[in-house]
Length: 121
Length: 112
Image 1 (cartoon, each protein chain N blue to C red):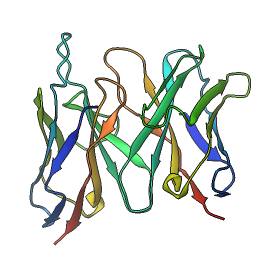
Image 2: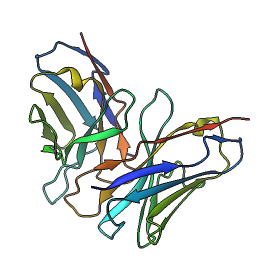
Image 3: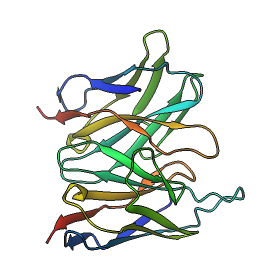
């Protein structure tokens, strides 16, 4: 079955760019799924950041749209997230997940283990 | 954005007893195709969230049948028929009707 593994720097300086990668294994990225990033500040709830399809189509949370870029590399089976001009408010565990594009979606059916990113000088 | 609310936010439960969590959305999650775009997730302590229920009432693969989801439109319920120790954690509802997808604040379930 498919597995997701997030990776990237655990510490980012304020005003810098946060960059994370999600490696997909056990299945191809394919065309039937969107691949999403979801974050969770320490001790708080979940926030959907955005989703990207292998076609390059993206949906971003309007609250983060000015900061976010998501890309997908099907040859490497990787999804990437870039979040620019970060502040302490962007400190969170960042999860990679996936959801189907069909009408009867099974929700976010697979999640990575998460990557903690702290924004601090 | 669709706002999701949950109640209660904290739920002490007795092992073997039932438990119920409510979720409400600021607008209907029922689409013309008859599906309610409401999912339930459980985040156990120290773990990533995982899906329990999708489209309002469908159990995800591997989810025990003591979990059930119901409701339509704006009001939804997650029921655990008999709570087991492994059910502790934070339960989130989420709307998948439109972007931005939004989650409820979470209900923390702990053993009384």
